[in-house]
Length: 132
Image 1 (cartoon, rainbow, N blue to C red):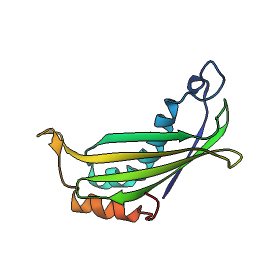
Image 2 (cartoon, rainbow, N blue to C red):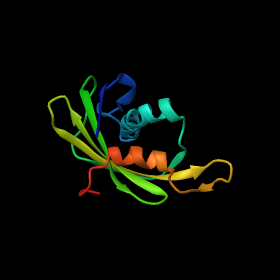
Image 3 (cartoon, one colour):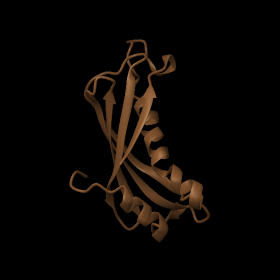
């Protein structure tokens, strides 16, 4: 499990005064990058593409809110894996739930591939089963 902390910036807010729905994708991306930062530093890039992203918006975030994104791997398949996310405001209130499905990708053949065994071990270290 990874926890990413951010602060809502002016650029994140729409004309209604709350964080624009599309910005949540950047917030969860930040947590995803942190999840794999150690792997990338040690082994280099493992290519994957986002095949699906879904977000349930539960309560708004506002300018200068502190934000915490909690992320964990919830499912691992042969060629894909799922990451779940929870987005909280600074008061600890759950503001959104999200999920992304990543597919292992070979940029040379432009097709999916099996998850590399070393990356698979790394994914399993972040696995929290039971809520995929």
